[in-house]
Length: 271
Ligand SMILES: NC(=O)c1ccc[n+]([C@@H]2O[C@H](COP(=O)([O-])OP(=O)(O)OC[C@H]3O[C@@H](n4cnc5c(N)ncnc54)[C@H](O)[C@@H]3O)[C@@H](O)[C@H]2O)c1
Image 1 (cartoon, rainbow, N blue to C red):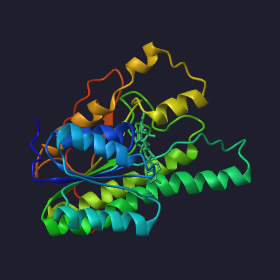
Image 2 (image 1 turned 120 degrees about the vertical axis):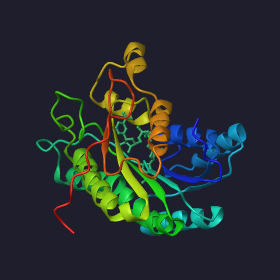
Image 3 (image 1 turned 45 degrees about the vertical axis):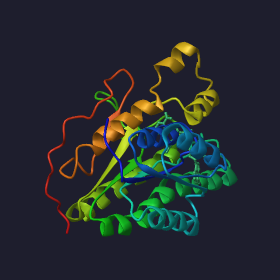
Image 4 (image 1 turned 90 degrees about the horizontal axis):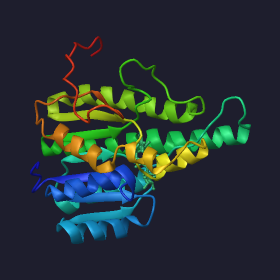
């Protein structure tokens, strides 16, 4: 087990699914936690994790779309624990969108909801945290994207035919991951993204129901579990200061849940 005693980890969207799974594993590894979510149930989740693991937890209901809320939360967590080491920008939302059938009203509302949550939320979380990580002397940022941008070998990129806005929001995360990794390499801060396939959560169950996909126990048992994704996050963290940065890491059904070989680091064409 990775030893995180004395480290502080911040997770957005931690009240359920993958974020909650990350929070549990981080707490079990000894980290102090800063947990936030749009849902007030974040306080119950934090209370339960603290009781089960003994972790110190600073939790609050926060909307990652709102700059004042997320900056205040990140700054508060940094002050509370006198530093910040790990940031998991996980909060996200999924909606079915259709470029053929959607009304103008739905088109605009979906764009605002999905892009503001999935992309602006990751952007604001990272921007609020980065100055603290730099001051700390090192850091680890993990953005949560999707297998749509990093599919298993032999498959085309992209999600389904009714996911244009979700995919655009997640593709944008790629720009942040690449750019932050380059900017922060000299500050010993690593930035990567997880691009996972179906993982059991409220979101995948909602999406599957929306598309009338089969959700028998046989199917849901095949989905990956949040604790497996969290274990891989700890493995990635454990690579240490010389570990990979700027990578989209695919995690796929019917494939081993493991880190791929490190990519060769190519020179940048831009300063
Ligand atoms: N489950 C999957 O199969 C899957 C696959 C690929 C990527 N993802 C990504 O994983 C991340 C976690 O999703 P999940 O599957 O655990 O779903 P989930 O719905 O269980 O968790 C998402 C959490 O984010 C929170 N959230 C939503 N909007 C927010 C906001 N504005 N501010 C703060 N918190 C907010 C929700 O309240 C919820 O607790 C998402 O970014 C999602 O896109 C999930």
